[in-house]
Image (tube, rainbow, N blue to C red; front, side):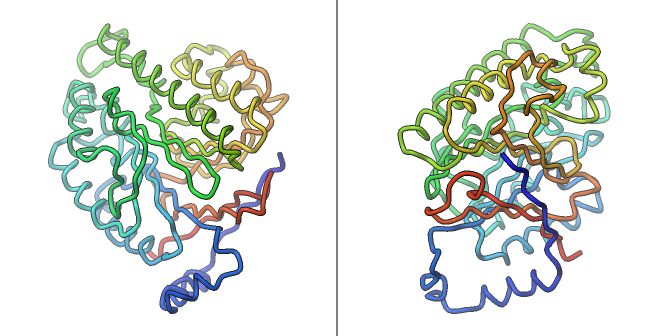
Length: 346
């Protein structure tokens, strides 16, 4: 599948969006392509005091983009060297509540997996995951911000895993973590290998993720969906880890089953598949499992040429959101989804 071309939206375009938002409501209804829609994605934000202070304004920039059907935050609501406190979680939840669009959030490793670190507060990561679910997923089946119904794995104890469909495009948001999907040792708690409770959580959560991936594609096939969009925090194809993973593929072992399921389902699905992730902080657009990719050997997989991956900017690069446009129902194949980076105003 051909790669899309990333476009950077100019300040004039952002202004134009604001002018469009001021038009009468029936202007959108008169659009010749009213089945089309857009959604926004951010991740690895806010990092550090300066970005925390800017975060409310960042949200308002996205609120001003009235065409967005929903927004997804693909995890990491803090940097990896700050305390994972209840107070911080509550503050971010308060900010999330100011979204005027439906907000889908999947936790990142910085807010639970890596909280064992001394400078994070030396928490038990599983306790922090429970707390995140209490703070951010207290109404399973509903998004944050404006309400949009979603299917959830609440019955399995994973209310953060959600899926939904918009205009024949299937979306699946999955709790897949950096730090080798949470298999790296809790060194801040004095551990040198993964603990039994840690391994049990990874196995259970991975099983739930695999089930949701299969359910997503099964439903998409039955409904003749035009595309499947998967979203995770983890960058399972992090270019900064490629050299180390080539030498020692076990550093990516926590993702192996998930990648295998994505390859199998993508190759059985007669339409494009998109994987949107954060984690590695640098915008990228590529086909990580196309023929000839070094990741095929690392994961021991056959090619999946129809898998397109988009990584959103994060950390110091989180100066924009990625605005995805879904074409109307008459579009199929590689024309279904396109994207552009939209800069925040400050």
